[in-house]
Each structure stands twice: as C-alpha cells, then as structure tokens.
Length: 335
Image (cartoon, rainbow, N blue to C red; front, top):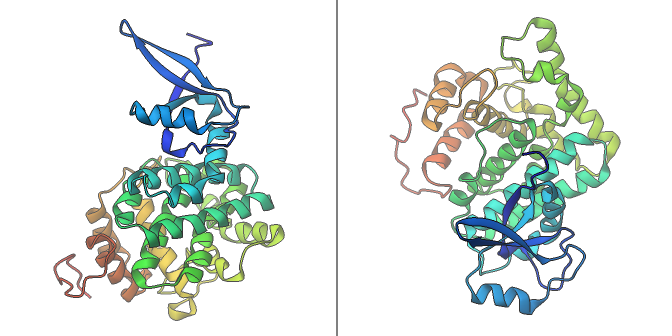
C-alpha cells in the first residue's frame, strides 16, 4: 500500500549514550499477532544511559528506524566506528557487519560525488578503523568474509576488494602504514567508473571494441579525479592505476610487465579478478571460491605474480592465518 512506512532493525550496540542519532528510534511491539512500532527516542534528543541500560536489562538487541532514514543512521554509526570496534561487549561478527554496512554507505556517496574531498577523508578513516578491527580482533577473517556481498554493484565491489585486500595484507605481514595506503587505493580503485555510461558497465552481452576501450579509460579517469581532489597518498595510486596491469605485460593502461608493476598493483589485480568471478554480475553467475581459483589458475595464471597468487590461495585456505606447515594440496597448481 502506498504511503506505508517500512522499518528496519538496527543493533543496540551501535547506539552510544549521550549522543544524538539524527533519526527517530523505535521499539517493535507484538500485540495480538500484529506488529507495531512505538517511538522510543526522537532523532533530535540525546540518548540517555538509563534508557539504554533498561533495554539491555530486558535483553532488547535491536531498535528500529524508518528505512528512508538509513543513510542518516549509517552516517551516525560512521562517527562512532572507533568506539564500536573498541567495545569488548560487541562480538567480532557484529563489528564486521557494522563496518561493512558503513563502507557501503561511504562508497555509495563516493560514487555520487567522486570529487568530494570529504568522501576521500571518510574513505581513509574507514580504512584506518577496519585495519584496527583486523589487527586487534581474533576471528576478523571469518567475520569480514561472511559480510562480503555477492551481488554486484560497483561500490560493493570496491568494498569487497578493500576488505579482501586488507585481510590479505595482514596475512602477508604488511605493517599498519602500508595497509592504510594500500586499503585506501583498493577502496577507491574504481572511482573512474563514475565517468562511464552505466549501460556499458552493466551490459549483459559481450562489449564491442569501442565499449571496451571506453571501459579501460576508467583507470586514468579515476586517477585524474583523485589527483584533482587531493588527500590521497601517492602510494595509494598503485592499486588505482595498476589493478588491470598483467604480469605478462598484456594488461592496461600502460602494458607494464613483471616487477615493473608495483607490489600493490600485482596484489590488487589478483583480488580484483577473484571478487569479479565470485560475485553475481549482469552477464555472469557468481562462482564458488574453488571454481574461481581454478579459472584463475588454468586460464589466467600468466596474468598474475606467481608468488602472490600462491600466497592468496594459501590465505583463503588457511582462514587468514599463516600456516607454518603448509599443505601442498590446498589447490592443485601446476606451477
């Protein structure tokens, strides 16, 4: 029925005392098999500690917001992300869900306004908080991996690639500073697609030469946008500029070969392809992880740095933890 308000649940763990959420919070009531929603706290009021404690006492896990207020709510949660990540009462999976949801909202805004310096700063802050979660929390691999979306949107792909890349970076032993510039580059790697006709990006049929040439322009277009916007570390441009370069020199935009591709570009290329293969696209069904790795190994192996590709397979097979007695049977590679 038109005009019906739709409500969605939000975790109580994301609501901080003595803050203003910015949108109304509701309690869900069940009376005579009918569901109704009662205003709990106005979006303009400060959330009081006694009210939160009362909900916790009664084991209330969720409040509700109007679906139309979701962006307002996520912007509020974004401002509390560090607090949530450091809160020992919140389990890792719930933290991962919150972090992923915030990232999707940020990237939705980035793709609406890619030249905004504010969006770049929000992206960098999200990467910093996500690194904190990954480094500090046991179980961050399974928590973050369980959140990855298998329905393709350009901005969810960007989040997936950044999450995978940060987890892999930890596995490889990159330090926090390296993870920061690498993760930022991954999150912003497809910004140039905002300048490409969506009809080309979402086309189900094979692209013609003219369309593919246009798609390939997204790398340079994205780099130009971010250079003009400013605030992006020069090292972050390696995954942005080189995620479509191939180890055999047959990639784009510059046909770089071998170690002429920066390590961030070589790693980004592997993760970008893996996520594309395991995600539902307009022109292709999502593959299971093993099937995706099999395609990469049998049909694309020369595109990748052999060492990083092997490491990536071991990383996925080990749950993100280094295995000192590595099995040679994790994946049948003829290398």
